[in-house]
Image (tube, rainbow, N blue to C red; front, side, top):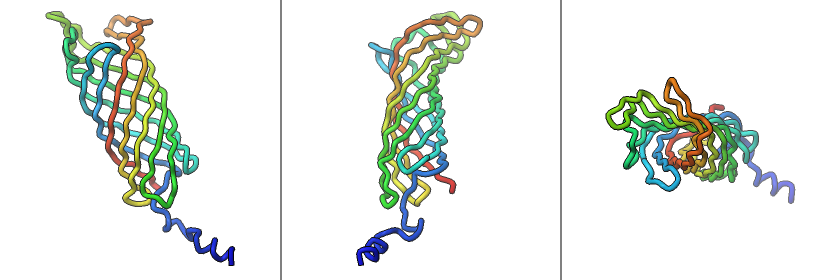
Length: 196
């Protein structure tokens, strides 16, 4: 009787599942973005991000992500132009997963590179051209997947990235060994799909 009772409580097929975190996943998010150099006022903007992951089991998913945002000119900036911010990262997401639950929260961490580019840059009356600030990045974050179907979920996330810009590229000249500490924050809303 005990065996029969356990059998009755066990899902008999994948149809009993309302969520999944295993296998290949693809995601896209609209982003609200902010960045601030240490000790200075921040700048905000928006953009889009793309993500590809692979769930090794219900809990652990490895992923790569890339995103880009346009950001408003920082207050009091001496460098005018069209500012953009980009991240490229590799990391791991840890789901608090249960395949019988539609709401799946997660935590994640990643490392990668971050770049701020300024097109048509000018300093005062002097035209500089394109300027980019490059450096490494370390990100921690969390979020929630809310599943519409077993393999399709609304993905809401918040990620905080710290790091230093160690190089400024002025086109013909690159200045290295710099130490410009900055924090960027990304709030994302989008979709994640498991195509299996």
